[in-house]
Length: 281
Image (tube, rainbow, N blue to C red):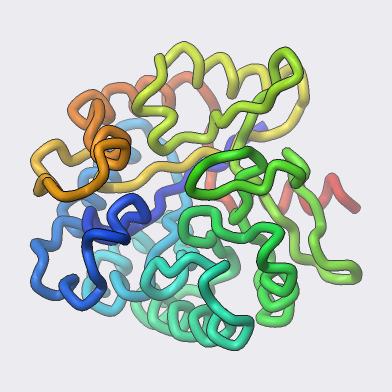
């Protein structure tokens, strides 16, 4: 059983934690570090001998097409992370449709390969967006990995299924929620990102092994290129909680990731989606 390894390709100034203190109007003036950091990720994956999916912002693909091409040429999957990291629940249905079209066109042009997967910025498909999965199905996406089935102050759909499910009746689209585990009647996040950086390695390693062995399902794991960059600019006027989440343990991320990549079997999200499609038949 392969677990889905994925990277949300966005720069340090585009993260949801800073959206109230860094305006989109300032993005062009910020130091871009996404290309350097993503190349670091590609090197890490080469060292570990794994392939992954890079959920990429259209904004990034438009400005760094050579990076997108390198990802594709290395045998990884390119998928969409939307255009400029607007949360889906802040968009209308029509705006979401245009966001998808714009991002997909830019990524496909840069990558030279078809995009069949999508991840919403900040896992922002939830009960407020009952039309989102239908729009994805209409546009021919094979899978989405856009739901965090937990309760969180920034995102979450705690009532959603924990494992692959079909969100649109009569459509082939499947949703691959980010991995969680249940303990003592409570549900906890275990799919990567800040949780992986902030919590002990043993917890993530145990949770993935438990999902694979006890529940016989693949894990869906993600992180960001900026999480391997302790030298990135420091946003002084961000809320304290946001700063703690964003900057904690950045220097330890690479060796911690390498250890996890060597401990479990990993593959591209489209491979895992195909296996889960077969399971749901």
